Length: 329
Image (cartoon, rainbow, N blue to C red; front, side, top):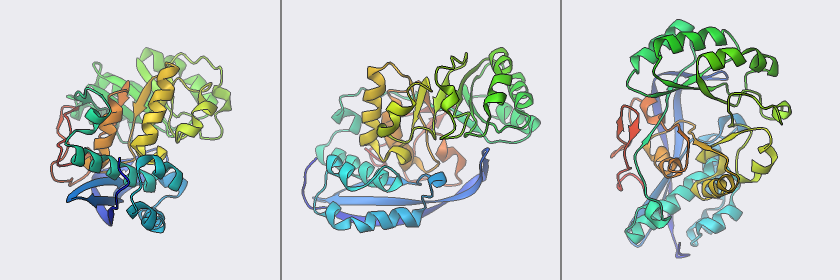
C-alpha cells in the first residue's frame, strides 16, 4: 500500500435492530457505527466499526481517536504504519479496513486476491437471542433453514434451554456463547447436557480475567476465547486455556492484525472463529476474508438490522456469497 496523500471523511451511521438483541450481559435495540472513507486518485475505500462496548468504546470516542491522528493518516499512512499509530479497537479497525478497500480499488483486485486467497461462500451461524426456553426453541424452529445455530445463554435455566433448542432442531449444529456469564461450577454441571445434546463448542464461558481455571482443564467440549483474547498480542497468554480463538475485527483493530492472528494460530494448529460486534454488511465484508480460514463463521449482524448498506451481502439460508466489490474489497 502506497504512502500517497489521502483524504479522510468520517461519518456516524445509526441502525435499528428489527427486534431486541439479548445476550447474557446486555440488550441492544439500536447501534451507532462510524464509517471511515479514505480517498486518493479518484478512488475511495471504506471501513465500518461499532467498537468494543464492554471496553467502553463508543462511536463518539472512536471518531475522536481517528480525528486525533487525521494528519498522520492523510499524510499517506499504510496498514503497517497504522499498527503503530492506533491501538487495537474500533477506531483502528475502521481505518484499516478502509485502507484495504482503497488498495483493492486502486489495484483492480479483490482483497482476497491481494492476499493470494481463493475465496468461497461460507456458512454463518444464526444467533438466537437469549430468552425463555420456549421462545428460543421457537426461534430455532423459525430459522430451520440455517444449519448452524449460536445460542446466547446466561447462567439461568441453561440446561432447559439447551434441551428445548435441541428438541426443536435435532438437525442443527449448536454452539453456545455465554459471554463470560458462567462459573466453573456451572461449566462442570453442564458437561453431560452439552454432550448428550451434541453441543459442538462453548464460547467464553468464564469472564475475561477470571478464566485461569481453564488451563489444562481438558474439557470434553471445545472452548473458544472471545472476550479473553482481544488481539494478536494476547494470543500467547490464552493458548493454554482455550482450544479455539474468536477473531473480531473491532477487537483486534482491523484485517491486518486479524491476518497476524490467523498466521499465529495456523502455526499452532488452533482452529478459529470469526465473529462480529453487530453492524452492517460493510462491517461484515472484511470478516468474510477472515472467514476463509475459520472453522466457525458468525457474520449474521446485518440480519438483525432493519436496514443495511447498498449492495449488501447476500445471505441464502446462512450461506454468504462473495461481497460485491461496490460494497467493500
